[in-house]
Length: 155
Ligand code: GTP
Image (cartoon, rainbow, N blue to C red; front, side, top):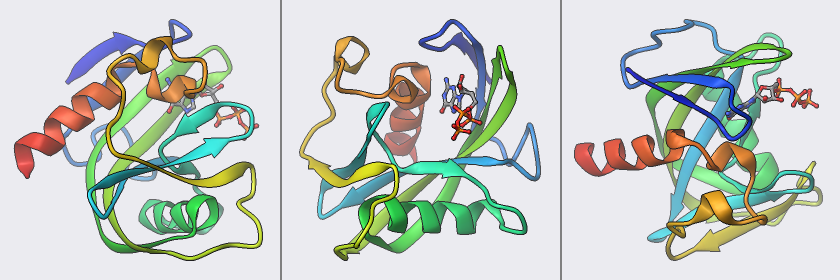
C-alpha cells in the first residue's frame, strides 16, 4: 500500500489489491487509452483529467466507469479492467475510488458532455502536471504516477 498527501494535503492510501478499502466504492477514475493516445476530458472547473465521477444509486462501480467515460468523452469501451483502489481522507469526509484502465475503440460525438468539454487526446502525459494550471488536482498526486507504473508492469 502507498500512503501520501494529495494536492490539498489530504491523506491518500492507494492499493493494487482487490477492493481493499470498500467492496462498494462510490467514486471511479478511468485511465483511458485510444489508438495509442491517452484519452482525457476537460472538466469545466477542475481542468484536464481522466474521466470518472460518482457511482449512482443502484449502479455498480464498473458500470459507473463505463457510463462516465461515455458521458464525458463519447468513448465506447473495448476492454476495461480494475487496477486498484484509493481512499482520500478529506476535510468534508472520506471517499473511496476505484481505478480502472480502459481501451476505447470509438469516440462518438455527444450532444452534451455534462460538466466537461469532451474528449482530449494526448500523445504523452507531461511529466510536470503538478505545476500545470490546466490540469485537475486529481491528476496532481501520486495516484497517477503509481497507477501508470503499475500499468507498465502488468502490460
Ligand atoms: P460534487 O458533489 O460533484 O459537487 O463534488 P464534491 O467535490 O463536493 O464531492 P466529491 O464527493 O466528488 O469529492 C469530495 C472531496 O473528495 C473532494 O473535494 C476532494 O477533496 C476529494 N476527492 C474526490 N476525488 C478525489 C480524487 O480523485 N483525488 C483526491 N486527491 N481527492 C479527491
